[in-house]
Length: 465
Ligand code: ARG
Image (cartoon, rainbow, N blue to C red):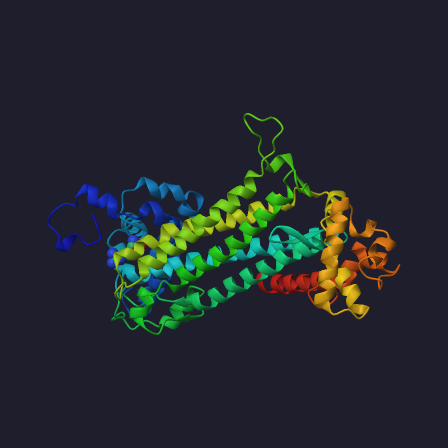
């Protein structure tokens, strides 16, 4: 029987029933629905709807159910109940009889669903924060091991200036730190309990909603019942956090895909995380990274879908909102698995230092140094830039690097160039000079590593038990 049988005399149309049911998606909220039900049963004692003995009986039965769904959540899928709320309530009625029917006093599925979903989000935020933490840690370990692995830095996918592999790793640590920060910020706003707001106008039972919120681990209760049951900002925020972070992961994936090409050949990906071609035996494809890059679209799609679903939706609850879970679950699952796969990729990567070094030395990535050198000799930068352009043309005509030009050849372009130019053009010197905060010098990279480590340590202190 459905939860609202009394008013209806005809059986539900099967096709509509299937269309309307959400159990195949929201069964994942079973634990949260049970925990929120236990808290609600306690609130009902305070307003004399349930006796303590009745509440204890309900709680014991709900706890048994909790064990059951923790062991095998899929068992729920065998039922043809409409949604997770009906499933829990029906199970309860089967075990404790009429008493089970008292539990829904003063609450609505409208405050229930968003309470359950918020509890689920809180749990998944901790999984995501943990994965982001581990990924940053992995990147820092690789950065530490590659502080002296030189490689070209790119703009427009053209070799621009030399950097280190460590500096590249730390760029992603920064992005992930912001992703982490955004999630923590979302959690602050999400952590408010809607339970006890009823269908839309509040509940007629004078429950202590702040107490109820604390029982469920929320920091406070919502102040407006209409808003509480209609609000899905937290879904939007999470999807937006997921989309931004997936953009970061997709850029990481693209960089690695490029580093792994035969053309760049900066890294080697382990056989364990690559796949072969069914036709071409020489190939080792970076599928894991291509999937991460590809899944970014799907996560962003979820954000667009839910934004459009909510746009113009009148207050308060509308069934449209049932659509939020499928998109949210899929996006957060995808994000989490991409974070974990990125860790796996990094743990199975070999940096080919010699190739990186060679590439850093090619491509005239030290041209800026030559221009800066001319500036120290009193030539205005614009003019220096022009002279260096000409020198680069000459060197590339000869097919050699700037360092390989003889002093006499340099002098044809500027008599101010002396023997000291060779040390200026060395990779080491290029890197060392970029020593302002955030630069690629060994000193700055060490500072950045220590800062990132400290940030992670503080995070672990506040988030781990
Ligand atoms: N399955 C519903 C959802 O996910 C639960 C809330 C149903 N409320 C209602 N008034 N029909 O949104």
